[in-house]
Image (cartoon, rainbow, N blue to C red):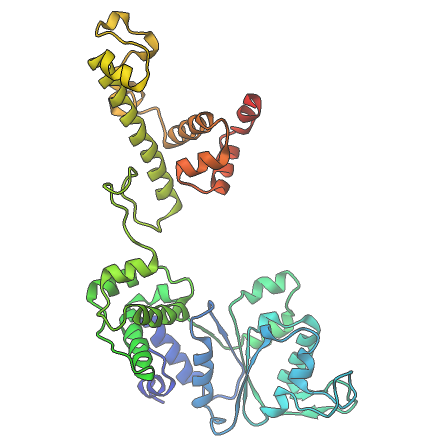
Length: 400
């Protein structure tokens, strides 16, 4: 069975090594009547892999029944999976087939298998091993001939160690495992995915589509896409709608992803491209405060050099041009214009700078943490963490 045929039939898009490995696994495992566990983050296309396994199996002419285990309440999941007899509970007015009986001779896909209750897992294990199950409220056992494909975005081994998933069921399921890769591990496929999603959406909605420019695709390749393919698909569809048939540019993508640059002409802050790593953001905050401090220093130097006229305008005490008569607290040290005194270079750290900036900002705002956080351009939660990290809590209380 060729990988090209499987890919065309299944609709799995991509030329990356990770996707080719998935397709290779499907070609090897699909014809063999064995249970399969598909793992991977949410939105990576685990259901498409399950469908491909069914389409290329000996059961392809029978039903594929898909069950989202995480969406079924614990109280009725056994009834949904195995059926029930009339009178088994209050609303059981008739006999009802469960998913396993419905899927007889075919395939059942148990999505989010890690969400099933422990008591239900016991019955799933029995079906896997013997094909036997008992409907809720019945005394007679039934048989089913079904292939089981399960999927999860959780680490089942971790759940086993926490006694949240049965070890025997875990080992029974993981005989063959196919890992669905996250989008960040197959960025070379983004161009193909975007084109497919855009063409399908524009055709089905009779909308004009003029494509994405290369720079726009490059920006998208650098995005994290925490929601993987599902997030990318939703993004492509929404931007086509919002841009009303225009060719998608880099600026449009940046705006939609919230990556617009902040200009120094529009803001006193240094230019920042968001989002960015936490460490980088913190360094930018420190530099921003130093930038503002330098502005203050330049202003004070101007007062010292120009004397009374500026002092009177801003309501400061009279300052003479004679440096000997300047209040020592207002004496300008030429070394200050470098932000940090030359003598401190080699000894001072970024943590020292950050601690001082936070401490002085808190003092300026009379320990008002909300105002301080807003001034520092950080969340209150981050500010609280920094206060605790630098041991500033005691100083704050002593000043209250």
